[in-house]
Amino acid sequence: MKQTYSLKEKSKQLLVIFLPILVTQLALSSMMFFDTVMSGNASAFDLAGVAIGASIWSPISTGITGILLAVTPIVSHFLGGGQKDKVPFAVIQGVYLAIGISLFVIVSGFFALQPILNRMDLEPVVRDIAKGYLCALAFGITPMFVYTVLRCFVDALGQTRMTMIITLISLPINVTFNYLLIFGKFGFPRLGGVGAGVASAITYWCILLIAIYVLHRVEPFVEFGVLKRLYHLSLSAWREQLKLGVPIGLSIFIETSIFAAVTLLMSQFNTTTIAAHQTALNFATVLYMLPLSISMALTITVGYEVGAKRFRDARQYGLLGVGTAVGLAFVSGIGLLLFNEQVARLYTNDQAVFELAKQFLIYAIFFQLSDAIATPVQGVLRGYKDVNFAFIVAVCSYWLIGLPLGHFLASYTSFAAFGYWIGLITGLACGATGLFIRLLRVQRASCRGDAELVCKT
Figure 1 (cartoon, one colour):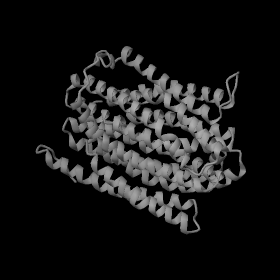
Figure 2 (figure 1 turned 90 degrees about the vertical axis):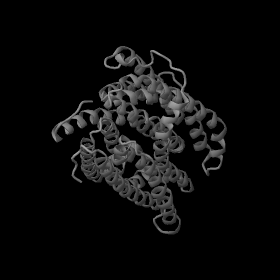
Figure 3 (figure 1 turned 120 degrees about the horizontal axis):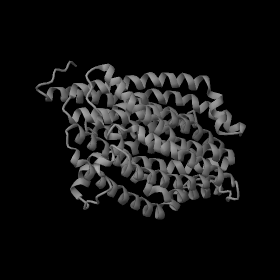
Figure 4 (figure 1 turned 30 degrees about the horizontal axis):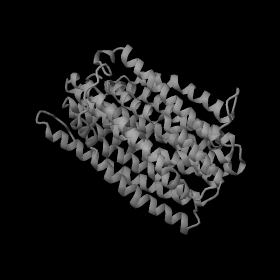
């Protein structure tokens, strides 16, 4: 990261940080994409089982990842304020926190998984695949969360290209083990959807080991000495990270759990509907990587400028990022409208699933527009360390508006399963509106708070 003096320089710096993050996020989401696509080509039961398993795991993993994302603004503020010596301690405390949380999740899952699955109206074979997928994935939870902390440190330095390289190296590992274990190639057992979980766990360990090597051997990471000294566990440092990270994690959990809840509610419909819904939701998740990557880049750039008390620059980064996200949303929406059939065919050879998935994908277009505003705005607010309001907005828009409306439309109108998607779109739109209003107020307050700042609002 470096200080910029014009909109052109800011655009260039944001692009340099954003593009590697986008490639990284696409590669990471591709793991779930390949899990879903390759499982779907094994059988509709494997696709449905992985869909249910992913729906249970996704809100948990993304919520906890959100807690750990607090490391990014913390490190960005230290760097912007010229306090590099405090960075290693913050990162190590984040690693400790990641390990502690991962162990808690594993133990909780051991007792809670079977009762959750038993309460769902699933075909026995789908239930068994979902359980096996999650049990296999559990072996990769700890390395995944620890890597998240290390990645936050690397990204906060503006070195997003390095996390891109690490992820690109690991992606072929995931695809290869998926091929070997899902389909039972070259003497490996044919595990179907469960094999996707095993492949993901192996991949997470590889990512962590590569990241550790980079921090020990590659500049500029070596000069920070991260992982060279094991500090004593600090409850005060944990408290600071949790104070910032818990609202972030809860906001992400609320948002992702609403999609998981809808998928679980879809269990009232047949396997074909579940598979088609998961197809559209999975592809929508891939497109979501655009605003998400912009959001993460904005947290880094805005956090750096706020740490240096350059609030006018922070405001410019925010507006630039949100505008870019909206433009990309229109482009991706047009692309999905034109290539609807080709996308659906990627996921399944089942004609019934294919026809229904095409219809679900149309609704996914409208997701992009709301996400293009809400997600980058959340990234900007995290750069300001303003995280509590986003949690409140998430609860109201998704659980008090989106899900009740979706349930009503699905249960009492002819929209049926599509009613849930209409509810989700409505909730996302309400959330985007509330967050954008909050951003404008935070930016104005920051400008007024600096007596030497000339800022037009």
